[in-house]
Structures are given as structure tokens and as C-alpha cells.
Image (cartoon, rainbow, N blue to C red; front, side, top):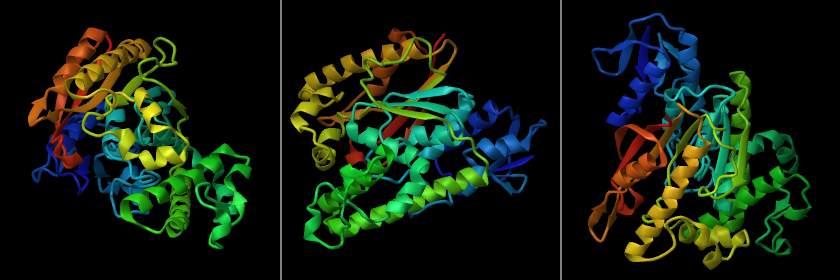
Length: 393
């Protein structure tokens, strides 16, 4: 059996994860001569690889499910397929990596995967596609809204199509323009439908404040684009006969998880990079529009409180509490994967990764290994991330 890598695979960490993925799926392999794939040395069900694999374009010449799923894309970015693109959230996971990590930890339908810093919902969407349940938690009400819209709107697509462009945004006087229809958002009975239109409004506010785009045009374009993306999600579910995993999105504090002891089958998350990126300030326009006071809400965000070295101290203290909670809720022998990067402060690199590993060990985790992951952007505060593999004994 020949397994060909996707054409967009270009980093060493992707190759490392692709090999780990095959191992977890029971494949014994050797690389092809062109180094763009692998040859299976044992007998394995090719349908299993086709259904689940993240980093493989084809198996014995037949395209994988993921190859096709990526094509359901309303954007120009390969990693923004289905609903992944919704809202311009900084520091997003690559969904391909999350799908691979779910395979690597052998997550299966019926399992519950926790992401206590779910952010824009990438982990939630990828678990959903693989039929795995997800406990998606974040302290940010904006992140909760984003994650709910991305994973729940498929349930109310019919109602969204009926409302179309008739729902008025709550932050604009609808009587000022005939371009807005006259159904007030608060009159919509379904919370999931209200969330959809509220999200279209939040993206329009972002476009207006960051890109100087016309709010009205952006709002209606977002409704159209989001509706098409949700229709894509439904088409993927039907085409591949997917039994979508159950996603429960909640606003909550990762330092005090409202989950029973040893109730989680795996953890995949990335702690907030608040030292490198102030999430409250970055999304101030959206948080204000949702009715939150920025000075008040920032006290709840990890890494935002304090200044200078005191900010690092508070961050490390808070994260230690989070790791203890993650250890508490994880089942024995199960895996916890943390994507973390070092930050630069006053031109000096802070070993956030090492501190995280030490804190996790103190919480009780066994540290297995780390995979080096080069990144770009994020204001050049971070140039490198690490994928940490940990296990609860």
C-alpha cells in the first residue's frame, strides 16, 4: 500500500506527525524514494486510513476523505475550509495538525476530548468531523460564541436559509438604511440562529475597525459566506456518512474546570499566549459590542493581568493551576498534548516551554517528548512552538 503526502506538506514537524499518525493507525512503513510518501510493509485496512488520515492525500491512488474535505472551502486558504475561517482570530491551530493529533492519541468515537482553551474552536470542529465528542471551554465570551457558531449552526441551517438577510444587526440603527431588513436580532427564538447573526455582525465590526470596510456590505457578505460554509459542512456530513461528534461549548475557567475526576479521554490544547498577544485588547471591538467592560473582563484572562516580570509570575501561577486541573479530569494512561512556544521579553527569550514541562511534571504528568514546530508572524514575539506529548500514568 502506497501512501502519498499532501502537496502542501513542507515542514519537518508535519513529516514527524505524519509518521506518528501512521504508527497510531497500525501501519508499518518505509519512505518512498522521492520522500513524498510511504510504503506500507504490513496488511492494514486502507479504508481506515482513507477515513481518518490528516497528512495523506491518497492511499493506493485513491484520495483520502480529508483531501476532499479541504476542498469545501469558501476562502483562499487551505486551512480555512468548512467553518474554520469564521472570525479573524489570531493564533489559530492548523486543523490538519489537530486531526493528526487526534489520530496519534488514538481518540475514537465515544471518547471525550477536552480543550480548556478552545479559542476559535479548531479542536471542536476536528473532533466533530471524526465523530469524537468534545468539551470545549474558554474564559472568553467571544471564543465561546465563535466555537458555538462553527459547530452548532449546521443544526439550524434550514432556519438560517429562511431568515436569509432579513435579520438586523444589534449595533446599528436599522431604520437608517434600507439595506438592513427589519427583524430585530432579539426577536429570533433560536439561540443558535441568533448566534449565527451575531457572529456575522462581529466579523463586520472587525472588518470595519481593522480593514476600514463598510459595515453594511461586510455584514451581508458574511451572512452569505457563512451560510455557504455551513452548507458545505452539511454536504461533507452527507457525502461521507459522518456521525458528527457531540460538542459542548461552555464559558469557564481552566483553573477550576466543572468536570468530574477522570472523565476525559484526551486533552489537546494551546495555553493562551497573552504575554505575546493581549486577547482582550486585540478583540476589544467585539467584546464591547457583546456588552463587556474591558477593564473588568481582563481580570479573568490568564496572562493579561500585571506588568513586567510580575505578569510572568501571575501567568505561571495560573497555568500551574490549569495543569493540575487537566491532570485531575484526565483518565489514567490517557494523553495530554500541549502546543506552546517560548516568548521574547526585552530582547531575551523566556523558556515558557521548559516552565510548562516542569509544571506539568509537578502536576503528575509524565513527559514523553516534544516536537519542534517553526512558526511565522505573531509580531515576531514567537518564532518557534513545541508540541508537547504528556501522559497521565
